Structure formats: structure tokens, C-alpha cells
Length: 93
Image 1 (tube, rainbow, N blue to C red):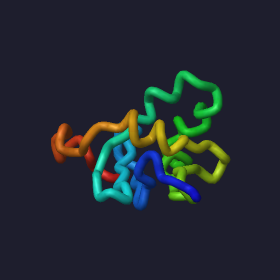
Image 2 (image 1 turned 90 degrees about the vertical axis):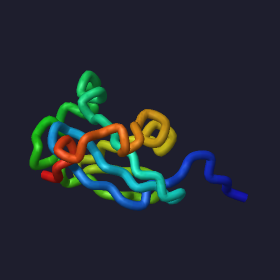
Image 3 (image 1 turned 135 degrees about the vertical axis):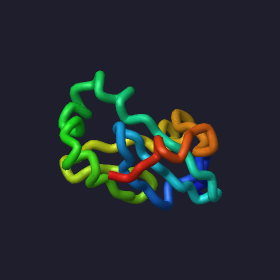
């Protein structure tokens, strides 16, 4: 039997300033700051905004065309509730 430990992402959108909007299976809406990941060479490619905005849901993860992904537990635990942001900070790209 498979048990979901963390809510799965249902929707993801790339926002300005390398933020990601994520809606989870439990209906929580959170914001994940990708800039924190840019210190790792694995994510270096996503500094290109054209590549960054091609984020998509893939199974229980989010991923990009070039292979970068984020584990669902990190995505959920390291993101911030959307209510802690001003609307003008959350503009789609």
C-alpha cells in the first residue's frame, strides 16, 4: 500500500522572481522560492527564465524539460503559504 506522506502537487505555475506557485492535493496553495536552489549546479540551467517557466507536474514531483526536479517533501515543507505574500509579488511570467 502506498501512503502519501506529504500532499502531492496538482498545479504549478512559474512566477516572477523565480517563485513557483503550487496547489497541492489537500487544496493548500504555497509559494516555493527557486532562488535557494541556484547554489547547486544541478539547477544552474534554470536561471534562464525561458527554461524556468517550462515547469510542469510529473507524477508526484514537479520537473523541467532539461531534467531538473524537486522532491515532493522538499516542495511542500520548504514552501510558504500563499497568504504570506502580496498579490503584486505573485505575477506569472
